[in-house]
Amino acid sequence: MTTIDAPRTPATTRSPRRGVNWEKWGWIYMRASGVVLVVLIFGHLFVNLVAGDGVKAIDFAFVAGKWADPFWKVWDTALLWLALIHGGNGMRTLINDYANNTLVRTVLLSAVAASTSILIILGTLVIYTLDPCPAGTAAELLPSFCPVR
Image (cartoon, rainbow, N blue to C red; front, top):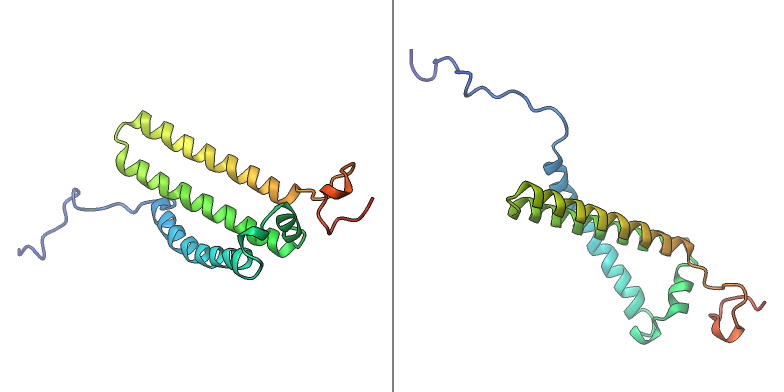
């Protein structure tokens, strides 16, 4: 019997893995979100810095006026979510690569997950609950697009 015809030993036989391969999907997410983020970031920079009057025009009224349009709310929400999850996933990879102690790794991964989640929640709340024309504010303090009350 040659080595080609030799029966496989149990040590070389691999059982099929079950479940989701999270490392593979994390790797795919980093590549896909990176491409989408490039488009979102350059669109954001173009609208905020090139198409208007530059950085000197960015103030509360500019942001409030931009977020009055549902398109820009969705654009900025996608930018926020993709960037934070992309960064959190990158930090997860670094922690898994360099944290050798199980307790330290668990604490660091929990801190990254918690901070990413909190920032996503707070950022989304700001985007969707901003009221640029609060009642009871002096008219001279309100943006120009607010109705006179």
